[in-house]
Length: 111
Length: 118
Image (tube, rainbow over all chains, first blue to last red; front, side):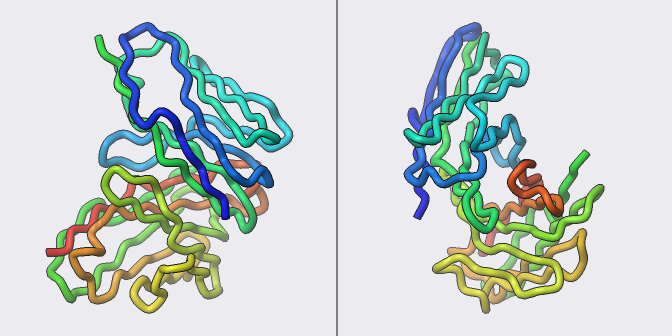
């Protein structure tokens, strides 16, 4: 059974800092790894999707990497802004199109 | 685009009543839809996978007679919480995937439905 863990559970950084969120998964037999953003009481916004054959994906200030053999993915956020404050979730896509979500990292970017 | 809507966004009901939540893919046909539940400060847990025209596949520990799922068309799936109790209070989120590309495209998530059972 796939288990996905995210570290840290919560993070507070001053505006402008670069930061890294970590995601680890126990079963490396995944089709892709996705990163989502969730604002309080809201649904999910897809940020990046990395196919199992890829090493990284970039979108604006976001860069996600994937090391399938070690069961790890990271989300790098450059020059953080207060608007980046949210919970970030990673999810691994396994068999039968099932997404297993991580525990989430609550990010707060302060002025 | 790929937009998924849910209705209602919020519902409060009395214990023992049934509640229906709709999930619609607005601009694409979704052969597969997924239902998740999220308790406060916890992550999303997959409840069931819904395929158009066939019975839903439920995850271990999810009561299929309590959480009725119907996927009658390529754009609509419904989740009915039958005889709801306070412990069913949660945030329910659906997602949909485009046909033929589940491994290459992200699942598209609805905005969620917050259920409060009194």
